[in-house]
Length: 131
Image (cartoon, rainbow, N blue to C red; front, side, top):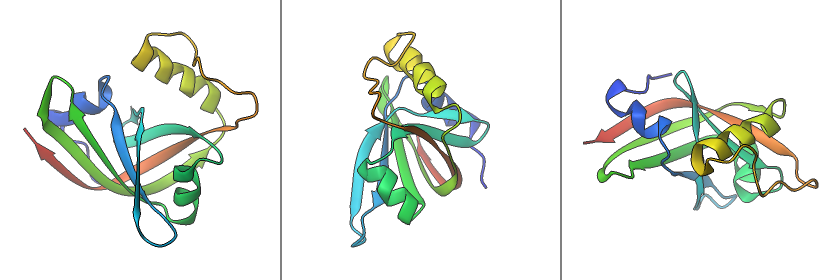
């Protein structure tokens, strides 16, 4: 695992949307905007089971994530890595923390009782930055 550089950690910690690329069955890319979180150098994102990115990651755990600084779109970080873990425990509380970070709301407003939330933990393997 490689470390997130201190020079760009603020982009991942800030209120910046990430774009996550996963691989479809035929090898073509699929990109989705997501909210992200950091746990040390591990990148976390939360989704619901049944979504395309979840299906893709369960089949092939390779991923690329790009995030630009909303205050300076020419400053960005790209992380290529792989799923380190998939966890259901704590996923509901995590999506509430993400709603606080991105929407300043105490709970996720689009919660659907029929959905099962899941957290993916991404282990960085290669990092590219631009200032």
